[in-house]
Image (cartoon, rainbow, N blue to C red; front, side, top):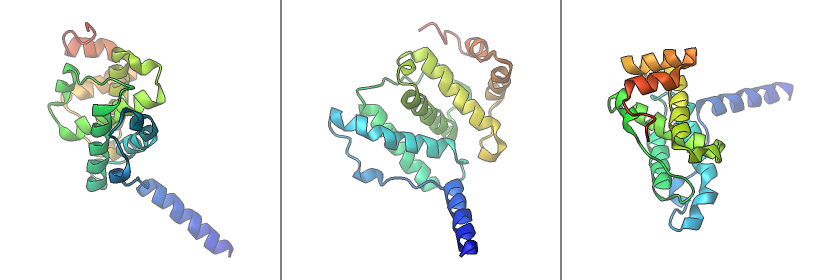
Length: 172
């Protein structure tokens, strides 16, 4: 009996580490303005899935999660999202863009009062993206410019480096 309990705990830990249980996104209505607030917990789960798994993991689940996030972002009346010129720093890398989008949603949903400030949203989405890229296990190689930003974030100069690399970054 004790062995079964140990095996069950190990399996549960492995399942949690390998893949979160995601909702069936097709069953979540996003039609009326009132549908978006209750869907936030599913958006956060989708963002966490993208941010907590390597880009090579469960590509279909990643794509479905990102598609759901996009649909929510497009219609939510509670938040505004601007994909600004700073995204040129990852040269249209779709995997990096997916992580950045997930990071924006994660920051908004975990910091709703601060998320109304577009500068804070962008800066903190970058911080989440950089942490993701800095982790070799995530298999997302940063561009040279993104690598510079990772170093700047470690040194506490991320905002300054973003301003340097993206003209008019904080002149919005």
